[in-house]
Length: 124
Image (cartoon, rainbow, N blue to C red):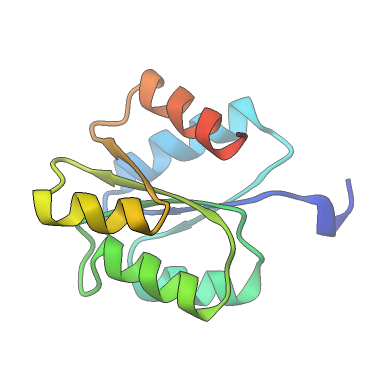
């Protein structure tokens, strides 16, 4: 597979356990995808400048820059990628906002069912 055909998946989560759980699952289920990780929005922006990201999982509760604000910034700057917002609990005022932005929301904790939902959404 050429570099231009490689799918890039960026996991943005302050929790290393959550990042690792997603990373291990994706690497196992889609070994031909490049899996990248960031622990905050600024790292995510730097990575997205270096690679064309196809798929994002982003935790809402990131230090400094919220997940929703990160998605707004990523969409504004460059990327046509698909986004999944992961949260422990999504406040009602954000539900309509992410729906308008064509962002899928899934609740944490990360389970096998969550990961199956993520892959189905990204590959639809």
